[in-house]
Length: 107
Image (cartoon, rainbow, N blue to C red):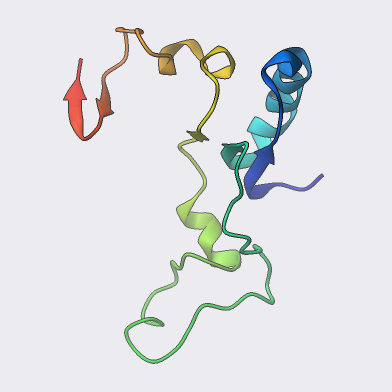
């Protein structure tokens, strides 16, 4: 499977072993994991074009198409991920990594 901007995983709580295997397989090749939801559906391909009159075409960095890859290389996004599937440093209660919660920086 080629890399992509997003990957969606639909699972039930009792499928955590299989879900963890999917996360391990997909996380290295996707920039965003969506759990039990759907991404925008924009394809990263040479045929996808984001353009129009200036200023929408004044940059190489767009939100769709192949040039969008530059914008989404990393960091990894874990959208609606169950706590048990998150890396330890992203789980609720972990205090070793600074993070923003509802816009407030927490140590």
